Image 1 (spheres, rainbow, N blue to C red):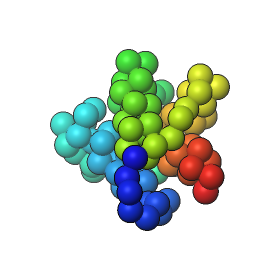
Image 2: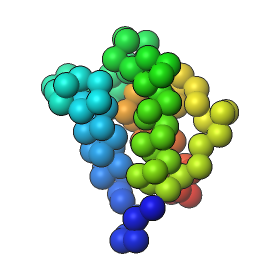
Image 3: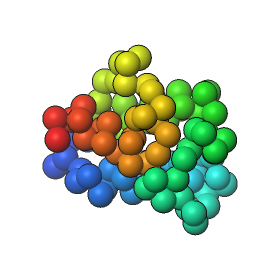
Image 4: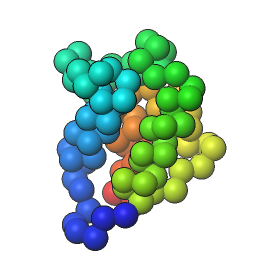
Length: 90
């Protein structure tokens, strides 16, 4: 968990986008938009979802439950960003 001010929604989005690009797209962020399907397009598989969840928990200090890990929450960068925001109380 960071000790500075809480990141804004935009900062959370940018960090998640960078993580997905680095880990799953060889660093390419082109074509990786807020509503780009991540799971249903094959960018991220089920094992990759676990990697993303671990990143979110470690980087943003959130605790995610099995119920949080759904296609609705994990299929887009926007869904992941909103999930982090909701768990941070934002």
